Image (cartoon, rainbow, N blue to C red):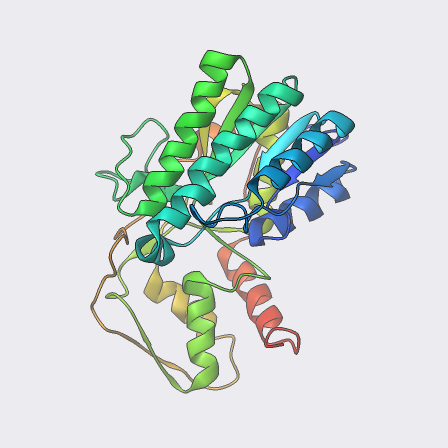
Amino acid sequence: MSLAEDQPLGTTLLTGASGFLGTWIEKHLRERGTTVVRAPKASAAYSGSNGTGRAQFLGELASLLKETRPTCVVHAAGSASVPKSFADPECDFFGNVVLSQDLVNAVADDAPEAKLLLISSAAVYGQPETLPVGELCSLSPLSPYGLNKQLAETIVQNAARARGLRTAIVRVFSAYGDGLRKQVVWDIMEKAHRGPVIRLQGTGSESRDFIHASDVARAVEAVVTNGQMQGEAYNVASGEETTIATLAGLLVRELPSPIDVQFDGKIPSGTPCRWQADIGLVRSLGFRPAVPLEEGVKQFVRWYRSAAVHV
């Protein structure tokens, strides 16, 4: 099966359009001829039990669904930080679980014919017992963030089983690219910007499966276009395991001055040691990662060093 390269998705309602992945998804879909409608920003309404404007958000969302009759809803909004989920688990719960339930209810009520795709995270796996990890492996999250993503997945899966909605889930592994201002790729560059010696957490042998954000956007299109949409999950990654030491080496070699990379040996709470995805399922839909890590790193360094980054 191949991607329907000449067939745009039609009208797509996108939550989290101003976020990192949302920005890339919107850009890709618009380039493919899709009409993208931005959902109202949900951050203030779902910042915890004291969030404000939830009723207004839901009213605006219902109006958009009724007016635009989207063929697809891509849910890329929500809390997206493991450390912040430990510091404020209530906020993470509202931003990932309550928001997802509200969105499912709104789609079921006002656009039941639309496909609904949840952008989830590899954090639901925790530390897999074996690699590469497949979609049918047990879920054992290590953080409130991972647990709340798992709960959001359950909501979306239940919507397919009990309410007849066409839904699917993409579990994004370590996404990076221009515009990313958190996580390990950004952290390495920030520390390298400040001095010739950088000190990172862990041992350097910890690994991740990195995927460029443009490839995430292409995978989203593949799943919505060719997926079964019966509540199933798809790993979205490169399928390659890369150690943090290797990543750091790729980044610093793109810099004009030598950088000494050191590791403190301490692994933060909620951090798995190794990740590598089995991407056979999403490949069966016609998806192939297009940006090698070496090229993606070069692009990221060029973006980071641009004048606009530190504004």
